[in-house]
Length: 308
Image (cartoon, rainbow, N blue to C red; front, top):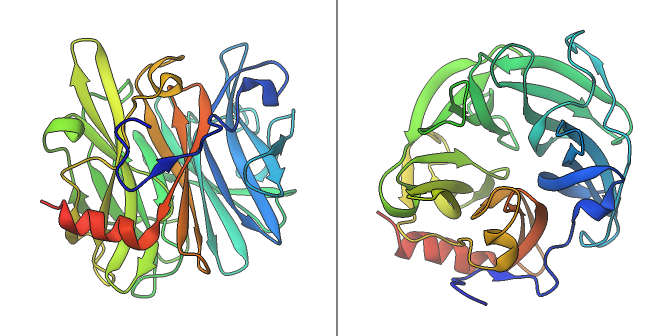
C-alpha cells in the first residue's frame, strides 16, 4: 500500500466501523489491551446525537470486536453534571493487576483528563480529574519511574488547538500530579503544528519507545500522521531519538475521506513478545478504527536511523 515504511496496514482495514454499535455516527481513536487470554478495549463512539461516548468491547483476536451498545458506566468521583461514560480518545495502561484508563472530557468549560481503573472491564472507578484544563492526549507509563507514577500529556486550549507540545509529569498517588517537564514539541514538515502522545510507552534496553501523532497544516486544514521516539529510561523527558520521517501518514481512502479527512491517530499498541510483532490501532479520518503492524526491532531501527 502507499507510503508504507516499516508498518504495513492490515489488508482488511478498517477493522471497526460505525456498524459495530447501533446509533453510532463514527467509532475511532480507541484503546485496546491484552486481557486474560483475549483482548479488551475502551472505544470512542460518537453517537448520532454527535455526543462523544466511551464503550467497552471484547475480542478473541483483536480484529473482530463485540462492542457494548451502552456507554461505559463509572463509579467514584464522577462530576454530577457529566453523564457517566462521556468523553473521547481513551488510552489504557496496565500497572500491576490493574488497568488504568485516561481520556479527555469536559467537567469544566474546557477539555480535561479523567482517570479511572478496572480489573475486570466490568466495573470502572473514576479516581480523579488529574490535570488542570486545558489538556488532551494523556497516557500513563506502565510502571513507576523513580518511585512515582508517570505520564505524558499535552496542554491545550479550549478549541481545536493550533499548537501542542508533549510534557512529562509524575505523581505519588495517581491523584496529585506535578513536576512537569517538557519532552518535545512541534518542529517542521509532518509535525509542524502540534504533537501528542499516543499508545502506552514500551520499555526497551534502548529506552522508552513511544508512538505519537504529528500535525501538518495545509491550505485545506490539518493532516495527522504517526511518528516514533525513544526516551531515556530514567529521565523520560530526555529524548534520545525522534523520527524526522513519519511512520505512517494518511494516503488510503479510509484515512483521507471521512468525518475529519486526512487523519492517522494512534492510540493503542500491542507487542507480541514471542514474535516481536507490534500491532498499532489507530483512528482513521475520525471515522473508523484501523490496524497496522511491524516488526518491533525494525521500528526501533527506523526511529534511530531517521532521527533528528
